[in-house]
Amino acid sequence: MTNWFRHAWMCLLLTCLLGSPALFADEASFVSNRRSPFVQHVERASESTVNIHTEKRQKSLDVVFSTGQGQKINGMGTGIVIDERGYIVTNFHVVEDAEVLKVTLSDGSFYYAKVIDTDPAEDLAIIKIDSPRKLKVMPMGTSSDLFLGEDVVAIGNPFGYENSISRGVISNRSRDVDVTDHQSYRNLIQTDAAINPGNSGGPLINADGELIGINVAIRAKAQRIGFAIQVDDARRIIANLLSIERRDQHHHGLVLRDEKNGRNRRLIVQAVVPGSPSEEAGIEPGDVVVKANDVNIVDRVDLERSLLGQRTGAKVPVLVNRDGKEVSVNLEMTLLPPSRRSPGHQRLPSLAAPVAQVAEQSTSNDLCWKSLGLKLVPVERGDASLNGQPYRGGMRVVDVLGESPAARNGLKNGDVLVGLHVYETVTQENVDYVLTQSPSIAPLKFYIVRGGETLFGSFETQLSSR
Image (cartoon, rainbow, N blue to C red; front, side, top):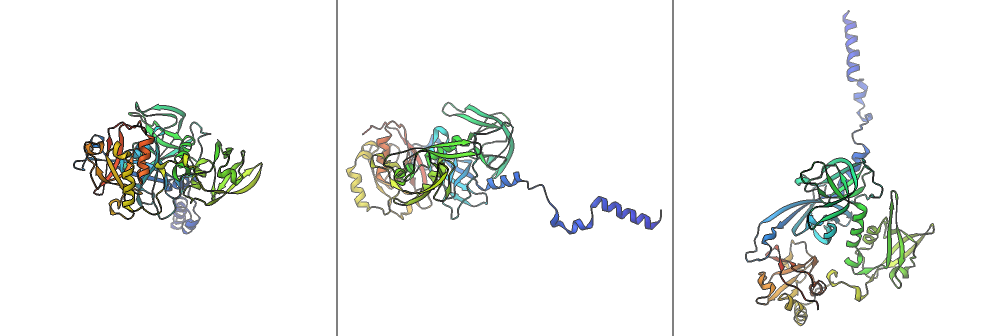
């Protein structure tokens, strides 16, 4: 074999093994299959998933505050962005008794959150962060058409490993699970995607990147057996927690039905309350709500959040489909009738009342004094006592009755009461509402701020209805 032939043969062999030099010169023409549509869906869902870190105090140390100290426990969980303004859904057991809620977004930025509302029986909670930018809302799917064996991904914060994903399939579409004597779940999705402590409250998404479940539980000592709340069940609870009646004391007067059957998803008006803002706007039974305030409406969660935070008197544009035709109306934000208002969920007043004036009101209203042994005045706007705290306001203790439930729990002048039971205490009316509307709560949990630290305990007293 001549040297020329040997050289030509080697060039041909290298070309076959390594490819044409032209291919290396034109790297832009190379198409990768690695960033598949499925990977892109996971990336998108991850942007709407948050990691939650909590600080809790041992329950055995939650009664007497003689030192104001106690061993703290760090917890972890996951949350899902459901509104661009920072509303996040997670499990109630993630935030239960938490004194500090730290939320970390997928880009690494973090914020301190506050609990907006909870449903302990359904193990769901809404928390909120105040972000300077709009957050990306998780793409919503439906659990009405789940398939056994379909691909799913769980995203979360297992054992503190933030932004972790695990892939699996749906193992069962409807499981009833008893976790403890006090907590049971119905109609859960079972999956073999790895779910661990810290995944609670995070998303279970399908191959289209849509939310189909909220991860909630694992089977102890078992492998690849995890459970998630079906998204359609969760959305019904979330709609109640975000209701403008609960949050803003507004009402729309619509009786609604979510219809979800695979890709057929719509919100149907079943009835309109006579004399309500919706009747005044001209909405009729049978209408399908399509859009409100530039929010595309699929279910009642979308409608409630589209109306949430609107000022009284504002007119919100609403688009409905009536017999195949689009009809535009303006829905005026109107306060609930006084008989239906819940003081426990009132907004902060636009200006704080003078301390002397409120103290006089508190003295004349002796329900709190008789029940708990406390006299309270609102914390003035700008008061440094709540700097760095995730609270909208509070009630400062100005007197404690000897041998009262408050005295026995070590409360003292200067403490700021920020919560009773599951309600915030921004005004005296908030406090009185809990004492009058929740007579059977015993013990009654309370939260105070002292020296920049949140402490909590329980009033061991049976409240009497008044």
